[in-house]
Length: 285
Length: 332
Image 1 (cartoon, chains in turn purple, yellow):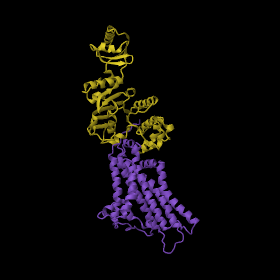
Image 2 (cartoon, rainbow over the protein chains, first blue to last red):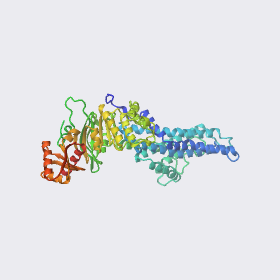
Image 3 (tube, rainbow over the protein chains, first blue to last red):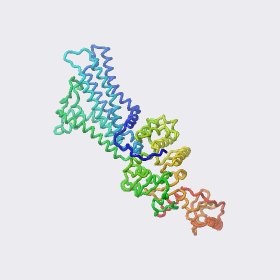
Image 4 (tube, chains in turn cyan, brown):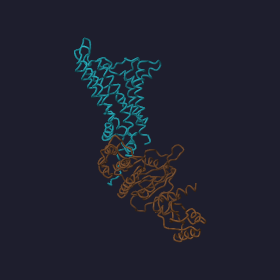
């Protein structure tokens, strides 16, 4: 036993050190099934989507147009957003609950490390797992759209670099939201399955239903749903257009002011992260 | 040192207060600790003192509140009342500083099954910070896990997980180890190995506090014990002194043990008589043991019972535990 004094440990700090973030990243990276799902839905999906379109176009150009059209980009972007959101939720919930379900949470708390630091380490670790492959997948889509768009018919538009970049940022923001909500809800419930199912239901059933129907007297409540706010912020290029900027009034609901959209989005991200932090700090280990 | 622990003694007396100038102090000091779950007190006004550099056993039946006490000590759950100090530092006020030199296993040691033993330790070392990562290799060596360190934990046996739990404790280069049922699930060879490891740690000057319901293992491993039941510490002190306080016992081999019990009970010659497989064990009342043994022989022969043998019985923790708990049962 080395004889050193019980010094005031920086471990009480709420800031997670890099090795702690790296350790969480290692734990997530080594989940092979989760990684296969993540890479499949973020990189594999656009690769297969555009791969099929390229093959069709090459085999029968008269019937099948070039792979990189604006409408194809909108379809690919929507698919990447929907599946990417689900993957982000899954990753967030896993990052929030794996220590607990595997029995490691207790070991970690016993180290004396601040619970807030343990919690915050999950955010950069988990986000890096989902955002990097999503960026790769989006880059594939953008490159195909930029270089394999073929001779343009009169009147058609090709998304500009600025429009593509805006779409990429929107997509990544959507995944950040999915991750944050999955993390917060996962930590709150202490398990992964129910939060993932709830958020899939929210994403593919509740949000489209609300976006398509303006409920009298409840429009402002509908606007608080994250998917509704994000749909209003959705770049036109992801809705089949080619210009820079949000689609705005593409939904059944009256358009929201930008500040309101930003507030709803920030509220969901910060709110769920704060709920997760509170639960992590107060949970019996 | 106090010779016999009873309810009236102070916790310091019960634990054997260090003499003036004696090195060390209390690795664990707990006063009036209470933790309730609804109306039930899982830890009920517990006073506990664990001397630094000792092996301390926290004994009790399942459900007695052993794990809850350990969870409260480590700040895994909050106490309702009382004070805790680990290595001289108040908990929870200075919990992070205290736990920097504490290693602990609570309940069954569980880890990320999809990671290797080494990777699990790497995660815990990252949480500990400092030099903990450098301790991974030595900790694996010490717990004899080096050859399996790069296998996934899902392939580990229970004994290997216990050893990995101990390796996780060693990352802290701990002055104090708090281990909850460390022998659980181990085969006899595994228990022997674990016992040797724990004794080795104590020999280095570390303090080991372990909870268990395995009396024999505690007797072999620990210097001091506390007995807990229904959340209360009912006895506490050095094992030798506690067992010594139970009195001298004699094993009697005879032709009719049941009749022997009756013969010795009227008038009472013993503080306790227990039937065994081939006779009975008689715990003598205070007084000259040789004369009492002779009186036992006279009475049995007088009652027409053939006596085949009389020999001193080795007092054991289990006997003491049973005598204490049976006395309590009678008091209640």
